[in-house]
Image 1 (cartoon, helix red, strand yellow):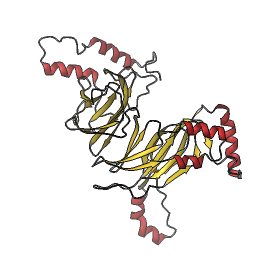
Image 2: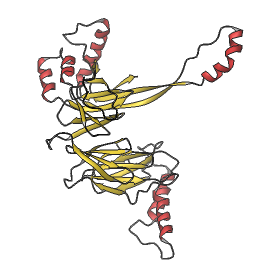
Image 3: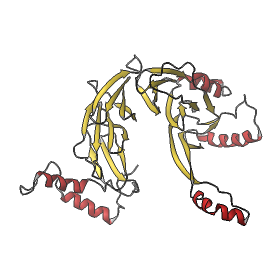
Image 4: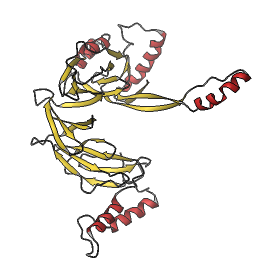
Length: 378
């Protein structure tokens, strides 16, 4: 992704010239300015408009570029550049803070007071331990920040930025936590090179279920070529997770996508007596599922039109109010290598619909590494 361009607008060029003329935080200000005035002068040139939404992009060299959400990053230069001491591995946010997981085992916290500016010059740091292992994943659950580092999860109080508790997901420190998603009071955790999901109670930090997805993936790949199936199972693991409308979406290295009915976790809940239902989706990827994401879609509700004058008079006011009603739907997006319809296999005889899908697969099979986006409406 190109972040700098010679085609930037005159406004950006004037802003850059003005920024270069401003003293950095390492330079000294004239003695006639107070400390508050110096800080205000620095913020005025390094902090964006607080009324606009921002997008934060982290780099391997520890830099963070901040843009307005409506900026075209191909031709716009970043509004803010922040240099952190280590590589950026993950970023999450709350209403008034942005939290960055670093490669040296630290979490950097940037704050913004209500109706104020982002304080990017002096972030707060939380050290997760002496191991200096990267912070791979972060999510906010019940007002706490859950950070995955190696095989451990550290829970941080967002008000005090202190670690409240730490606990292992697995006993083997070489098996790292790769992903975490929350559904109510339940937190689903995946581990490196594993297809077993662990469900944790967000209040007690106890693991209440272990769900093995191998049988479900095996069923989806039953019609595949034997060599290809063996290859997929040799390196089978969970590669992406998402929660949307009480459903847990799981992507795997085999390209298979599954949905799981997320159980309702309550305080004091013990081990699950039965495992939730796992449903495989026939449409998936030839290679691994690289990410799962969801977006909200607003669609105007269809309102029937009355056919008589009496009904028009009776329902006029009600119809005026109802016509503005909207129904919120979600779109789930998966990104991965290639596209595959798992119904189009020798084990599943082709129907007219499957024949059409087979042609699509044959065409895309010429280059299975081509990135594909699959969309579902739910």
